[in-house]
Image 1 (tube, protein in one colour):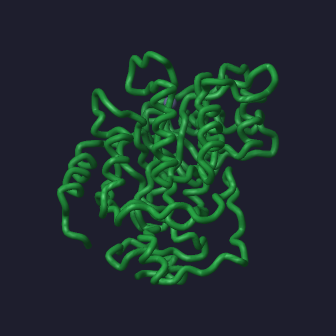
Image 2 (cartoon, helix red, strand yellow; image 1 turned 60 degrees about the horizontal axis):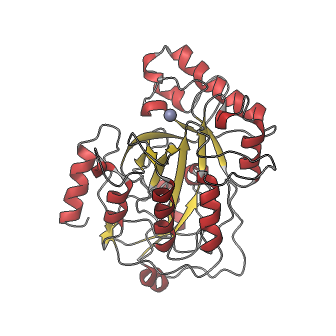
Length: 348
Ligand SMILES: [Zn+2]
């Protein structure tokens, strides 16, 4: 284990102070990222198969890249865009654009919660995964024009435009919806468009139920009804991840991932720090932490600008890809490899 640094200590304090977070080790990133040198992963939840032309990673290459596939992954949480935010859950379009541009410039590549929970992280060497998540189906996040295109000014339009000007920045995200998503009665055209363009649609319960406050049967129904409305909106599609409303688990915690009509690979919390790598023993699929998109104001010490600043520091334990999806590469100082992955491990 690394000795605690000032950064590590600050991060540890932030973790301790927040009920929603997992007690993951604090960051310690090894040096600046190497720019992406190959094509980005395909969008959506189905990763591409490894190409036969791609070279296998070696310890020397991994060291040069500072590869660390047991490192931390920021999962950013957004709710609404508005020119005049009145709560910490709102961002201006300009702030959102600036955050995406920062992520692209710092060699982050968007992926989905489903890709993360199923361990399908296939990213160019030297890049870092980030998951952009959007809760509650607000029309400021996504609306279709009468011509069937993403409306100007919406978050998804901004994401697509950012990707168009930053090669390799995959325009994908995970969108967690309730009933009437994006202002549509049944969400059909909006959810179908998103699905067909490589976005993940996840469950946020039908009516935004606080699952901690209801009976196990009612929790099962709340999740099942949300699952059903997505499947009806997108024929043939099955959601595989859940964002817990208010970050609250059902009292019967196994209902988070397994209920009468659903089986999920992961569930997202509301706060308040980077997620562990899915290849790490610290990864808990039913309680995956997220980071609220936020720069200033109340509790901004749990916000995205704070965490991205920490993760940009040398020795921050940021997840950095080796570019080889068949190998889990990490410095020998990392000790949390999941035992079922030892045959794929490359420690350097
Ligand atoms: Zn919500």
